[in-house]
Length: 168
Image (tube, rainbow, N blue to C red; front, top):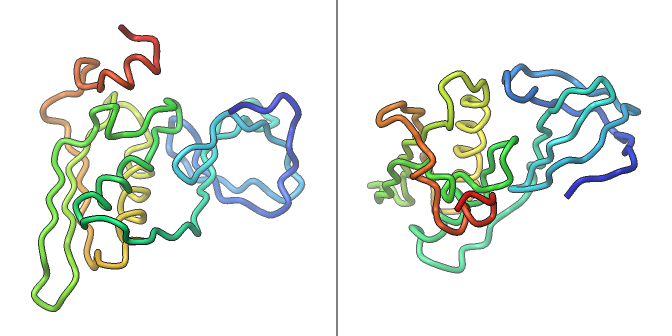
């Protein structure tokens, strides 16, 4: 989804510069062009010509399936701000474990990577994953680790995502 006409921000928005990961403030009244609206967030091109990611937090998730399915659905709602494919289909999730806690609820442990080590979006994605997991009613703890081994490569992308990206 891309808008040809600019939008005007009605409120101050904290944003993350893509790909550096630097936090900035876009003041109310700023002009931007929407380039991506996926996973509860928005990537916009600012009037200064650089892309930023604006968090669309405030979404709640209703439990309608097993906790494992809920966790994987939450992970599928996380997107790289530069690539319109969720991080599961991109092959960025290396491990996901869900265990019961003694006092009730569950703990999710996720190991993920990025498409390139130089990408500055690691902390942003880590926070996005953790926030979305903790939005699940039964997840009480979420441990999210960025790892580099094994190095990511395009063979890790799902067939569906390859088709979506035109990589066949």
